[in-house]
Length: 456
Image (tube, rainbow, N blue to C red; front, side, top):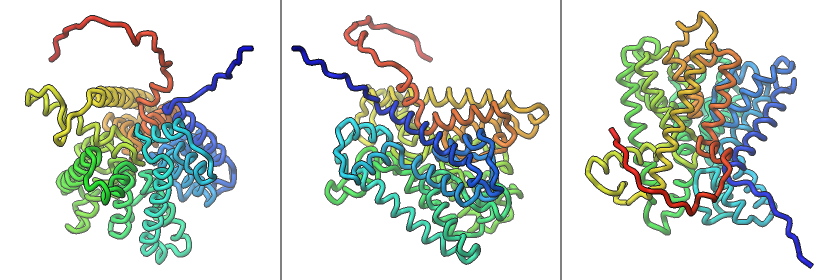
């Protein structure tokens, strides 16, 4: 008698990741919609809850309400949990609890979790996920303790919760803060002369933005005695962007009375350094992005679009993508047949993936920018021009969370597109496409003729 096996329906990593984030966003929306989540004990409009839950889960930071002034302690806790789950990754959180419960993890589960951080390798399966959670909590706890030295003396017992919330937000590159008591939507402008806050948050942002793969390399350095190509690339590009960004803001905003002109040199240096770190994906605003000149805003757009490292809590197209593009151009200009980076030959699939990520990302930003600009309510074009709309579109995609004013002026249609853009930016355009496209092997063995086409 023949035995029929029931076919098991499997999700690939990309689809699992997309569905996981959608579930978290839906749950967060419902919790924020509860009257207990707002200070006035009234239900917040469901669309605004969806926008906030998406922004928190995608660790973006764009918001329609001031986090301190609108949301109650319960609502703030919900936002913090959404940030934590969104920053570390839905699949990794689930994997951690499976490990903690003693459940057996198969190769497929490990591959899904690794896919959440754009890393195909699943070596060290169980232990890597435990270390991710462990060291994430350690970094966040240390950050909260340091922040408490500044916040508790000023805000009393509430300063303890502020320290925890902002430490989680900074490490996860989210950009939500609780400094609204100093001025609605002021973000970190009130902390310009508080170096403890700025430096601590900047270090948390950098650590979270380096990525878990780099952490693993540092933890195993004692045994391997060398850094991987990925780690070298991330550290090199991160250093260049931080130094370059600091000099950029020091120069471009030096004569702007609304931002840095009246600051002493030491304060100007610290604030320029923080802005350079935060603008790439975190979204804490210490200078007032709407007060910057348009040249500085365009420079910020570039930093946001680049973002952090793969496998990190940050967004953007990633520093490694930019480095591969630079290496490709350099190798072609030097008439080399292969793309070389730090004396390593890059696989052609890496080049293809870099091209796909760059093109899809630019397409997503262009679509969001165009729709946001033309959907602006009549009479607001002077307040939210093309640069401001482009700024907020890139901020949503790169999950930076900074705003030049367009988000506040956008209508319902514009904010709906911002929600989709934040989701695409966090999950990744390639993952979105791969989760929608049905894989087929029908053309696998078909041989097609070579072709020639003129370029440039």
